[in-house]
Length: 202
Image (cartoon, rainbow, N blue to C red; front, side):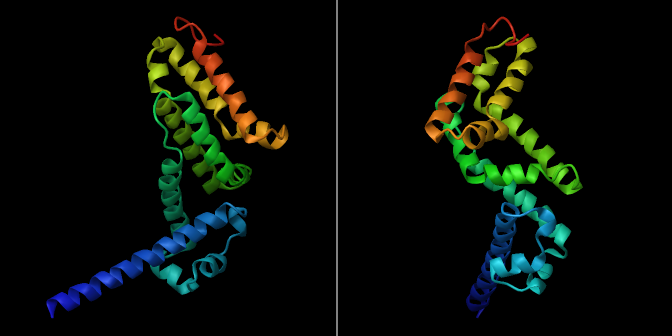
């Protein structure tokens, strides 16, 4: 009897977790397709295959749902951007793969930060996340620099690998991905080739 009850409880817990995951994924996907203020709970419910009441039962409110989506997104994005430290080519390939999938959505989200406080909080978090990514991925190269020049080099590597750089090359210049990646690798190689005794660009 206990084994049966335990099995039923586990099955229910799994069903709850699956439903929650589908809701989070649906909200995350929609946030990449539309402005955040355009997304209503009914849209998320339809995408996730649940009712609005189910969403409210899991999260309590639209605001609480989007707070949970922010954490969910952070985990997914961190996994997508994982790259071996010190490997420039791998870092550029990984960040381009991320932008090819989510770059346009990120740009759409950045456009909201001037009038949407929640968007501003999330884009600020994204900037910190990207800078931390640069520090981690280029740690061997940055560690070889004098302390005085390390932050300057970090700034320049952030710019070289930023979503706006991807946009300039892929959307504005309309380069194919291989050519665009090559441009970014060239930028990074030039930055890293600057004398270690001075900060690139002063």
